[in-house]
Amino acid sequence: MKPVAKTAQPAAIALLRQATALWPKREKASDGLLPSRAHLAQSPNSDHNTGFAVDLTHDPFGGPDCAKIFKELRKDKRVKYLIFRGMIWSPEKGARAYTGKNAHMKHLHVSIKDGYGKDTSDWFPWVGQNKRWLHLKSKFVRVKRRKSEPSSPKED
Ligand SMILES: [Zn+2]
Image 1 (cartoon, rainbow, N blue to C red):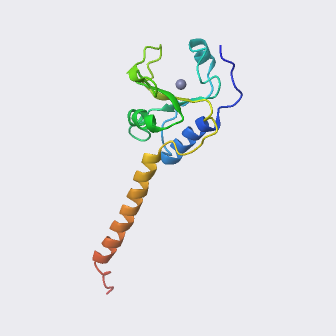
Image 2: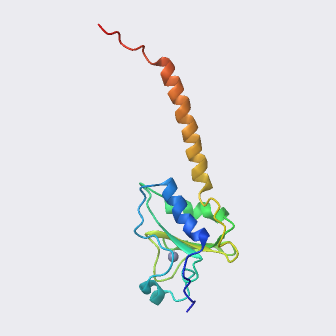
């Protein structure tokens, strides 16, 4: 069994915090950092033991869509491997079927490479860009609308 750390790595904690900042009302039921007893029994050599892994709850309606994140995070240099919905991806071997006991239907598992535990840079850069664009767009629309607004009705 891999020894269990006292705290998760900052990079793992940052992933959950950044997700909550982007989707404040997201589901968290399947979030995880350090292993539970049940998890330890099932996966004694998990990266959760060392604090180099994080589970993000799949919430495609009000929160993060882990199907999309499973693809986007392949560009992130910190990722050792990803598991979601019966698939595993690693930089060395690409995507393939995951045959472990837990198929990971409700959460995305992210294992972080040694050496990147303290890297808390943006885990969701594509979401940030999209939100910035929407913000700009809403400003533009607001200005346009103001111009075409009818003048206030006269009081009799
Ligand atoms: Zn996990």
